[in-house]
Image (cartoon, rainbow, N blue to C red; front, side, top):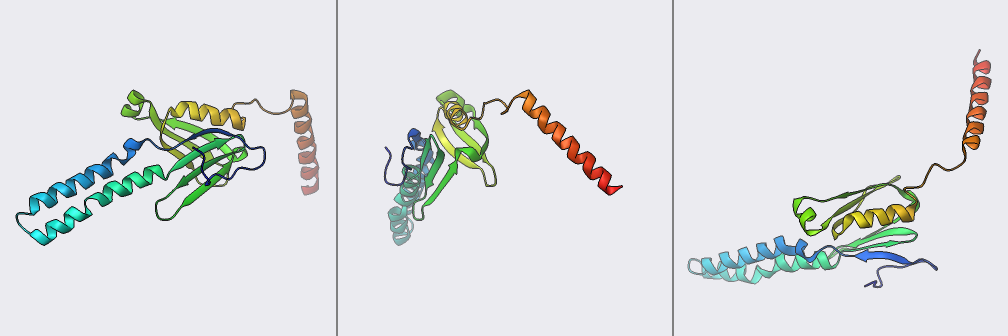
Length: 179
């Protein structure tokens, strides 16, 4: 499924890749059907306008479909990637070291059918979202595992005590200089 949009560095491996569920295009398809119904019903009243509506009916459905199939998500052992867009392409890359927090959300239908959204908080940047994907909790756990999000505090207790003692000494020195 990896296409030319995903440029990996040497040694970088894809750990997960997906796109939003195709059902995400359903509202656009329904809008297109509604326009078609109005066009057919309006054919009786105003012929030229109805023909124009009938020709425009596939546009919302086509755009919604293209929006879904042109959205891609990928997780590698080094970064998170998102590509989206129909006319203009928006591609975003976030290194795993910049991930601060992750959250998986599911509404009622998402819980019933196993889909949802993964929200990724990024240090020094805006949030990244993987929207309407299957098994969002698994993806969230995978991101945290790859990014070390569940690891313990680095260093030993003795190292942290040494840091504390050094900071206290610096503080005492500064207080003496201010007096």
